[in-house]
Image (cartoon, rainbow, N blue to C red; front, side, top):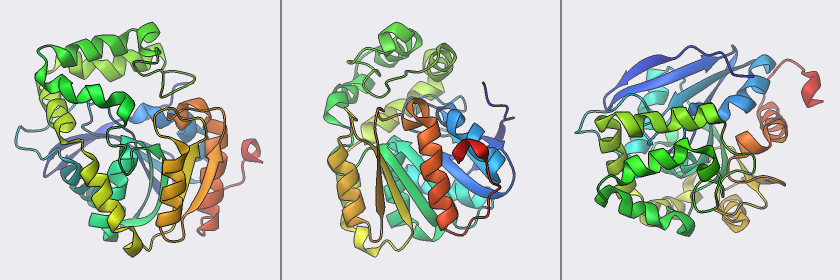
Length: 294
């Protein structure tokens, strides 16, 4: 069932960011990855919101956005970490509990190490880390900013669900696959907006493992509660990345989920919700009991 959430636009120093909001109670900020938008989290949020959580769902400028940023915006990984920190401030979240997936997990590692005062707790699910930024299977994406029409071709591929589910495209990320509506929505900006394509070129040019490796070197200073949740059969971000994060982030715990790709929110939303709820309860939340999670 589609999630009903009315979007609004937050004006940040970097430019406009669209946000959707569902539920009331303890705030949770959800970060998606490249070439997807906040709807990635809808199957999880529709379970979490009734539990007493206020779920904030920004669509970040990562290729599937509809609000292009000014040409001067810094879309390097450190720049995007700053944008997320500024978003937390603009939403008046104080130190925020942040839940990330895919490329959002890389940016969240930079937020934890560059802007620790903005974070109360973090849940890092399957995504970029260490030398997997970009992961080897998607290394060819680095050429797209330099290929005439390359981003339009990517968007056209995303719009064809049969093609998008192939292993050489986005099929490696999800066992379930994006819905036809998501395929249309995630590709619309790249197909129709020069500003979105400009942002995406800048985004891709910034992908480099030095950013995640530099963040990892500073993990010993991280003092936040951290939960790492990883897909055991992830073909893009192998389980050893999640295991290493859980070892090197002080006090972090690892939960491993079967029968899923990187897109845990699409593939196993019920099980992911149970793990999130348990972690949040352990941090002193007082959500309303929910039979579906019993």
